[in-house]
Image (cartoon, rainbow, N blue to C red):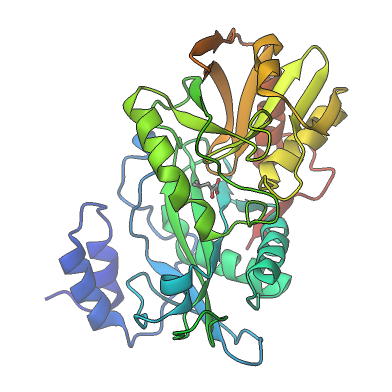
Length: 378
Ligand code: COI
């Protein structure tokens, strides 16, 4: 029988480990204080060249709770595994939950960096206020993200092969029957190595403009990263994917004519020297990649506009692309709207490729990080 940390390491060297075996090891390990993997820890035994966006069990997750006082206690790393929830937990019954997504990158010299993690912390705080939840401070949040990345360091892909996607969750875990805020909250962070988000890899996206299903409406929670924004788009997405599209582009719920966002990312149009993106007024998630690309485009001399964009304008755009933490920067090859397929030329001199290579350059340390976007994990 394999025991102790060696047992855990051995079992998790392969992503093909059955969950039964993993659960057994988790039980055996639960009382053991997790050892943080050191920088010379051997890399996880996975195929780094073929990472998609698929869940893989890593070693550790971070967890902390808070109750009535609204203050999150000092958290700790636990083995990655299932969590106990009351059937009447607020998150299960009333969807009181938020999530975030950020990434840790490994550079050629082995050093590991995060990209603007404090922005995720702030977005979680804004979302928590909307959803009537307490939230971790920016320091607690960033520290939890760093600890999770470090503890799972052997799962961070080699430079250029992908990244460690880090998923912070804030959920109402206290039991509640009547509709009301939960009496207890959990802040949890787990991580998973990822490559391309879309199954087609880096191939241009084919989007479908959905006219009947709306993602968000004014006064709702579309502007925050509430878990409740995601299940309602699954049906439209599933239909679009069954018809060969990569994802769905949603329209505003009032006029049904302004583009808003895609299920998993924000959208941009380029026409000449002007970069336009739908204005965020509560129905669009203010992506951190979205914000960063706007700054980069501005630095490169583009005029950047946040405004109402009619779907009819899609036809005259030179270029369309999507942005998101999971998605990165993805060029759009076609958009189907009212039965008409609009095709976009894909070439090596697309503006989005320029923006993306600048973003990646900053993340990899080959372009000066003038705005202090990069945070090293030591
Ligand atoms: C992200 O980009 O981090 C997201 O949360 C999008 C999600 C649909 C994967």
